[in-house]
Amino acid sequence: MIHNVGTQLRRGLASVFSSRSSRKSISHAENHSDAMADGQGYRNPTEVQMSQLVLPCHTNQRDELSIGQLLKWIDTTACLSAERHAGCPCVTASMDDIYFEHTISVGQVVNIKAKVNRAFNSSMEVGIQVTSEDMGSEKQWTVCKALATFVAHHELTKVKLKQIIPQTEEEKTEHGVAAERRRMRLVYAETIQDLLASFPIKDDMENRDCSHMVPAEKTYVESVELVLPPHANHQGNTFGGQIMAWMENVATIAASRLCRAHPTLKAIEMFHFRGPSQVGDRLVLKAIVNNAFKNSMEVGVCVEAYRQEAETQRRHINSAFMTFAVLDADNQPRKLPWIRPQPGDGERRYREASARRKIRLDRKYIVSCKQTEMPLSVPWDPSNQVYLSYNNVSALKTLAAKDNWVLSAEINQVRLYTLEDDKFLSFHMEMVVQVDAAQVFLLLSDLRRRPEWDKHYRSVELIQQVDEDDSIYHVVSPALSSDAKPQDFVILASRRKPCDCGDAYVIALRSVMLPTQPETPDYSRGETLCSGFCFWREGDQMTKVSYYNQATTGLVNYLTTNVSGLSSEFFSTFKACEQFLLNNRNDLAPSLQTL
Ligand code: COA
Ligand code: ADP
Image (cartoon, rainbow, N blue to C red; front, side, top):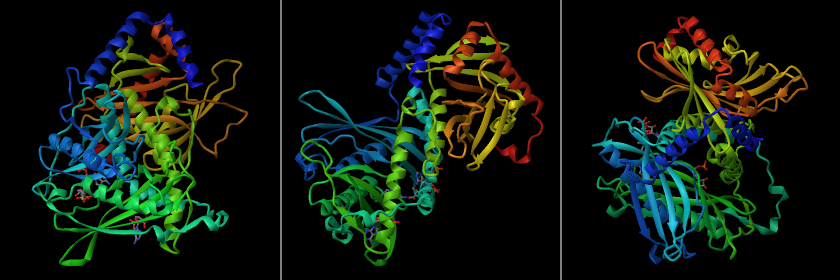
């Protein structure tokens, strides 16, 4: 269905747009942003690049670049980018999930590019891209993408960082979405703990073939490292990349002990450096295989630091979970032996590893999936609710950050912009209202009030208050034609206050599937892909309000008639929205004054 939409849209619009001129402006904008992203004429001031020739001393037991070495290079490049922006020393606070798509052989070149996506207060999100290059054939591969958070410190005090001003479309998108990723990161540990505690995990141990089971304790590794000056920065703080490399080393040993072969690291789960360690610290690393699935295994690693003079006072520095596979000569994953966990903690970790696997797969699918690759409605489930909410907001921010919007019509200071890309036709309406942004946020984020100004919303019922910022509604819309049934929608609304000044208020809307809200014969079930509001404070009591919609088939006809001036329905609906905001501008709850 999604794929047909683009074709229909293009056909529908062919007569409406002065298609040559709008296409020209789109391709011009694309070329412009490509050129900027390419670095021809523009280079992000925080960008740092590192290129390394992979030598035998960098490789592992499979004669491939060791992931530990790669993590050291990634961390150094990202840290230099963070320090370039901060102008002072920075430490690694966390690293998001990393999925390794390719291994790298001796003689190939690794290219690492890092840039700061956004600065918050004392922390920054750094985006890292790793590619490999074959010198003989000129071929290039994406190895992985990573997102790290660095915290700036100046003489042990916190630093207030200057903001990043994004220039290109890609920078604007990353800047917008970084705020949403930060939100997810900061609740990550609790989210996982809640999910693990509430997850009904099937215990499949009884169905496993006991003759092929390896006792987990056989994979146990304990190793100690002394932090020396080469492992630390000029302030004596251990490099995050060095710790990650040591963790990868013990995890690989534990994995090898299960499979009795040379395993390949496929993924590292998001982790957080809980506290610093310095030159002179002893680091104790413990690893064990928590669970083995058919073709992959999860190895957990825990790092504690202590000073020689106070060995009993150990500080928990980090824990990480790594997924390994064993590849055969054709790069296909081999079947792995089952693991028999130790009673107590071992059994708990065994079950938690199964749950993490499910959560990880959901997260990878929803978070890293392109908008156009997603099924329109995704099933709502406690294990994916954080990621669906992230996806909802980031899709809207990505749409809003596009730089090839074309002004297509304007009536009474309400502007209609359109954007045509491969698969969709999107539109956005824009106006300035004389109402405070906090009040606009309050009025528009409660979808139950939308029927007061939008006749496409006949009735709205709140069916689930997920948390303070996310709600699920059942919306009924009038029939699209006289012989059709009314439509209904199940919509997730995610609202976000601005992260800093200049940032937008966001109310993102998308369809979800809820088991408690199945389709009924009374309505035809509609779906909305990505829509919602972004608005910005434009001074005292003034707000620029934008409504975005990635148009689906049902809207094409309305859109084309509005663009061509045959109908002004969009404009009158948006004007009704303005009137609704003006009529209700004064019933401001005191708590909202600070929003
Ligand atoms: N992921 C990303 N950022 C995080 C985070 C996490 N899990 N936990 C905290 N932060 C960010 C906060 O958002 C905050 O950012 P902001 O100032 O932009 O709002 C910043 O870190 C400071 O947070 P705060 O709560 O004030 O401090 P904290 O006591 O939690 O300390 C660290 C956070 C990262 C500074 C601290 O845990 C630390 O020193 N870790 C070790 C870092 C290190 O030495 N790394 C190298 C390897 S050991
Ligand atoms: P959890 O036990 O909840 O998984 P930890 O942070 O204590 O979290 O440990 C992370 C991982 O490190 C564990 O899942 C396990 O794989 C490994 N680990 C931690 N402590 C030990 C230990 N004493 N012996 C073996 N492995 C350990």
